[in-house]
Amino acid sequence: MAQIYQTLTPVHWCSVPELSHLEPSERRNLSIPLETRDGELVYSRCRMFDVNFTQEAMGDVTRGRNFSWPTKPCSAVDGWDYDLSGGMYHTIVSESNWVCEDDWRANFAQAMFFAGAIVGSLLFGLLADWYGRLPVLVLSNVLACGAGVATGFCRGFIDFVVCRFLVGMAYDLHFMMMYIILMEYVGPEKRTLVGNIPLATFLTLGAGSLPWIAYALADWRLFSIVTSAPIGAIVAAWWLVSESVRWLIVKGKSEETMEILRKCARVNNKTVDPSIYEEFQAATKRTYQLEMDNSTNWMDLFRTSKMRLRFLIINLTWMVLTVVYDGYVRSLAILPYSVFITNSVAGALELPADLVPVVTLDRLGRRWTLMMAMGLAGVAGIATGLVPQSSAMLITVLAMASRFFTTTAINSGLQYTVELIPTQLRGQGTGVIHITGHGATFFAPFILYLSNYNKTLPYIVLGSLSVFGGLLCLLLPETADQNLPETVADAEHFGADQSFFQMPCLSKRWERQQRLNDAKDADVTISSPSFEDALGGGTARPARQYVKDLSDPAFTGIGSAELNRQQHQQQQTVPHRLEHLPTDGWHNKAFVSSDPSLDKHQTSRL
Image 1 (cartoon, rainbow, N blue to C red):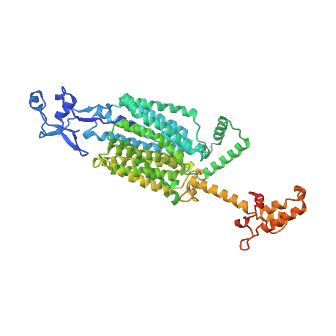
Image 2 (cartoon, one colour):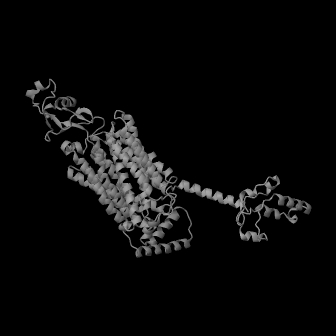
Image 3 (spheres, rainbow, N blue to C red):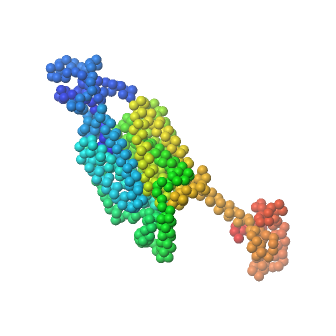
């Protein structure tokens, strides 16, 4: 996102040194022809009138421009004039004149950024599974800090591209490693909260403040240094953050595992029986031995047809997510408002968009939350493209809605994809997924290029992709309230017992209904052989009859005559087993009696 403010392209036109004594608006009005762009008549960015603007000819020229004058391309020697009004400032684009024939350079630098992300995801993903999550967390952030600061000192195209490539290498894993550590430490009921609250807080602060930091500094070099230098503080994580216990278990590092667990218990003020540690350590050794006997690599995710299909669906879903998200982020330049305002509003939307998954992921589940978010983003995107271009405010509102739902979707997908990959391959698997995602983002600029034909056409394409991705994720299993798969074998069988409409809220409701049904059955049915034997006969009797039999005069003080009367009355009112029912239960309606004296004998449980 930082490169948006490093490569902003101000409004520009050909520079004419002979007219430097005039005001910029006068120079442009006199020397620049008009052309049609996006259906509007605007000043040309790359052509000028081919007229002799020397002092000798000024007398004729200043009478006004003549649209019949011939035109020619801007001169690379004379350069361009840039409009720095509205808070715009010089960037590497304006300093190096990456416009007109060289306007591909900024896009190429961005492409190399994603190329670096592909290399970094693969490299750091392997390192994370080989050497641990914590070393990769520190290393990737040190790389991001160094290359980001170095970007501010770039003087040419080559060094800028190299720095962007290096920053791209750290782009994904520099925070994904911390995310994976969090996911591997907490139980199913806390994963949503722990995974989304940090994103909601810090991503909102970063995305909302970044435009105004750039606006206040008004210097792309200083902006690069100021926004990159604080990343170096992550080095402190080496002493503050513990390595993933799940990774340590898989790697057979039982002593380090026990040390971290004891530290967790000490920090949380918990007392754990030493025997539990011993049993757990023995289990970790068995897990490690199993891992040694069945060594794996990321290719194992493709060895069986079921896991191969699932992994391909995960990759395709993530590719759609990244293309749509990157497209919506960059499409803000299409909107007819200041880039600082639109990006800050979009950044402020990160907070509610990041908090929505906290509420929905554990109720609707990961799968249905992702489907609904992508579906709504798709509907809003398609609507944006169908609205008349004259309705600027409505287009902006719908575009922001698309960005909101897409942010919710990618945050949900971020957690979902991590949970679907087994622990022993989570680093490599996540790296492969993000590699395919970064590769797919190469298509985002081509989608946005469609705005040259129709300004809002990219939104229709992005919206259609969102709907497709939302339907695609329904083919994946639900991970909410489930123990994460540890091995490839676990992942192979994961979700086999789930229904298509698997949702935590429905599952919990079904479980509550089952408990109520069981309790209701207990109210009206007592038919076990042991209970019948306890009554001294082979014929089951209702619970209230059993309670009645306990009303012995020795216990209640009721006279025998009164007791005989009550027993005779009960024999007339207590129903008998229906002949057509099995001998192991009572028909519920058989317990209904109109005798009010029996109400006090109704029992809820034995």
